[in-house]
Image 1 (cartoon, rainbow, N blue to C red):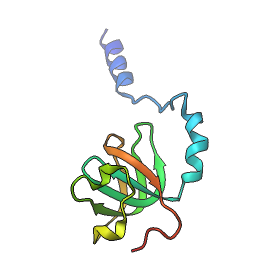
Image 2: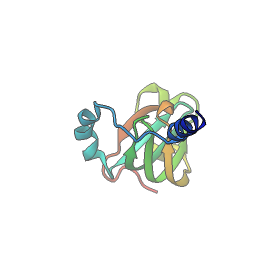
Image 3: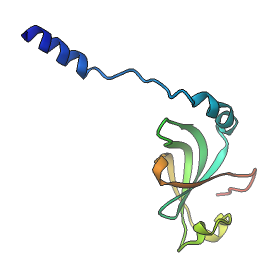
Length: 117
């Protein structure tokens, strides 16, 4: 009895191998062209992150490469219009960033030459 209990405890402590969702193949063709492109992510707390799209996971967390953070005053980002980053003043360099999927309000693809530091 002790041996079976002990062996069952050992097997239950082992993490399950990662199994991707079945629908991941549907998003793959959409996300692949965005890899290494500069994207702009607006979060619930009125911050904008601008960086190179590196990857995402099954929980919709987004990893950005060299990233700059901008603070938006008031509800300026919630109006639906694209916020001019030069009007926001200084940015803060963050480096590699993980943006939680639950915090993301909007994702935009930056046009070439649009983001300047």
